[in-house]
Length: 312
Image 1: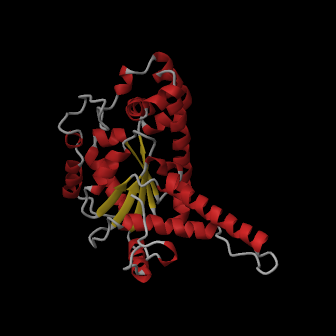
Image 2: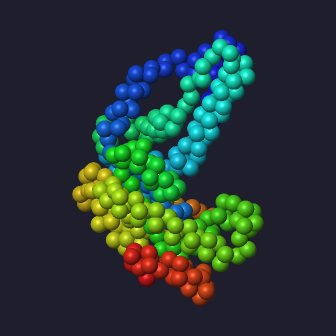
Image 3: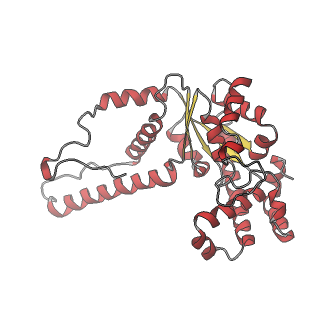
């Protein structure tokens, strides 16, 4: 939706005649007193499932796919850099004899504007005083842990990890459904995509491990497999990490809100629908799609990390 001003020319009206900077500032300050968190993980690792599980809790608000670091941050950066360039060009070409160097946006101002924009988006769903933890899920968040961690120094991070073989298969059917032409252009076969995915998986797991070593109390990993096999203790651990009610009643309420049958429109786990975001919902489907060479490649490239998570 476009943001438009009423009126025209120099006499245009403000975007919102009720705009109150102090009120918004107070609102964002209140949000900062809650527990902020971010969920990320490689595509088709189960991040949407985790988001919906958490959002089913009465003390948690978890928005989905606001694309903060991968889209919003670079767009803001580009805009500020373009404005800086405009000011410098004007000053040096038209006002060189009368004006000093203009004030320019620096990295700190970019971070301030980005943080404010993020909080404004999160605040849209977190006005209820009973909400204690406010977060957002975008898969790419896992690539920007350091940036988010620096800008929001009290925020916590949930990294959703899945066996790269199962995740690669799920992601392959997902990209075939959503961007088929682009997928076929870049990958000659499913095997080519599987190997690409495994490489991305290793790189992202390493980023998470590095951040976790530096900030052990702000970072937690949860696997799709643990949530599938033992959902109650796995989810209770996440709720405890966020500082909200993690009792059995709260956990069961979350699980009921995001049970596969409800998300898939009535299908049971294992019943495939390739047109659905929730295609199959099982562990071990890679055995139906990975060849021997694909399996050897996955173990060679990702074996140590897969062992750490118990995938092999």
